[in-house]
Length: 319
Image (cartoon, rainbow, N blue to C red; front, side, top):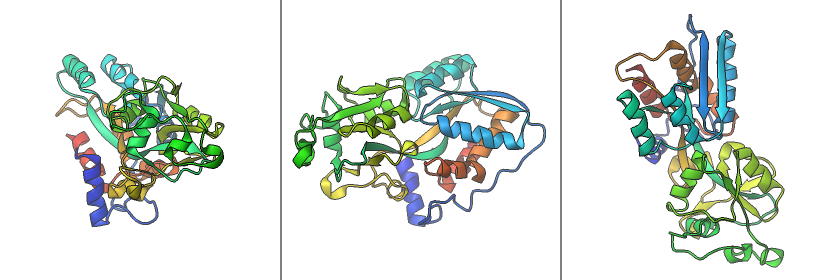
């Protein structure tokens, strides 16, 4: 699978996968219902993907009422052990598996788990809707959230240090984040904090919605979450390497490669090379990648897959 930004930049150049209005690429076909799909499937993993998995399951059950899909979303780190132990057939993750997780899976099965990209996300930095901040550099983000400050910036503890004035000058920054079981926690640590450590003052939340709710009720707050959890009570902060390159967490900016925290969301599966998947899991993944599933992605506030990615995923699953 090609890196996300490579795929998105390619799509932006060709213009085939993305239009001015957020729509699914017309080359991605609708899902075709088949016969003989019944049974149970379990999904254990990402909280970020919890709403999407639920919506996909509801849509899928309209075609297959005898199918039962159980969904548990406590964090991406719960997906690999569930796949290894066989307690789940689907492992949603908001980050790629770590090498140690892949090694543990391969030690048991003799092959690697398959990563299935299912949507594109802009991992957003949110503030209260009444916060007037115009943007933050990635060095400033590191200075706010990290005790290590590996990007070389200063320790930032109040809003005056990032350019706000008047009543905001001495207002303390209140930091919200996810717990360590979260793939979003890991992705933000790697990409925004240059693999540095979080400050101990971060108010760790068990879920993405709790992060956004905390920011909505705290005027001095800042935090991070998947773009699909945005509400009218918070706003996204444009980010960039410098003030001249601030880019908001929009579809177009992810497509063009300007937004620095764009990522794939994944569902990992136990797919033995050269052996067909069980019919239920295979059809559910086909539904997610098809037009039907990608329209749900947009409905839930995330971004649909490029057509090139969708075709590559289906090809890999079929082999």
